[in-house]
Length: 74
Length: 327
Image (cartoon, rainbow over all chains, first blue to last red; front, top):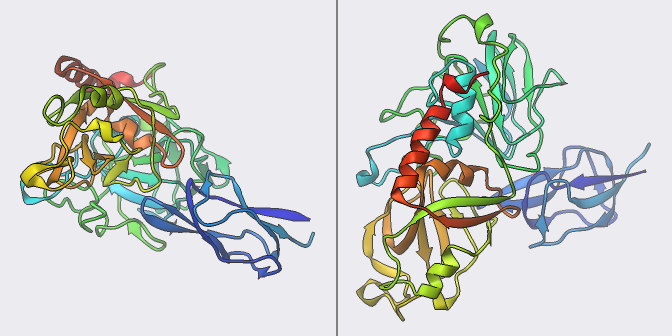
């Protein structure tokens, strides 16, 4: 099944640190959001494999916008 | 005592009106970014409106209470939960030793939540204020945002805890939140005709500007101004850009600094002087709206105000932040 890793706050995507096919564990940083002249880490809430990366550097993000889609085990 | 499990995006101890009287030393007042949300939270738990509380920017604070007390949460709806159960906002609630409060992400309106505790927060005042100046690393709790493992003491409640619980606000006392903030402002000191064109002033008081992602407790950056804004071709002895002037004191909080073509609202932790012109000042009663303006999402527009309106609005806000607002 698929699960999203979503933006936790508004801002610009500073970087996505995973690529399609990467194995991700719960709590692992997958992206960084730039807001208030500070970088904030976005961590995965699931173990899984990166199926799709939806954001790139400089993309504007709002709370809840999906950044990465993971394939996770049921 | 509050034991922090997760400090969230940025949680600070802030009071109101902050650290006044030190602009001449280069020290900003700091203080709650939204003094209305902090003030109402304090009133709900029986504190004076300006007592220190927790300013939770961006959400995600998680903490455990070390004592029985009464709390109130106001500001943006960060879906606070107590031991996993939804916690009502804008009213006072009893909590027990061992209870865990957890905030989620910001709501659709607003950027900052406030958590007030009966008796306030027992941090040592620095220069007459408990407020954190995060860019100066002083005041508040160790001059910084809260981190996991921090333990913050509370003050002594004023009155009986059982009488402080369950208090709510009168209808109409709760401020209205939006994604399109209108800020009343007084023009000056650097305006038309010497510094700004008539067209520029019209733009200043009509343009709807998105809040830039770089906005923080020091400054809120807005969309760039057109070159036609400026009445001068350069800054004379102040510098090469028409926004330059000889260094002068900034009227923070609320001055709109014109830095190059970028308008920047100087607020809580902003700079106290510099070499850029200032085209308007947001009235004191509307400063709270800046604190709830969400970077990368909300917009701001300035509405021309007068000194008389500013004074009256401040009087009305003072009345709002009192027990007269309780139901």
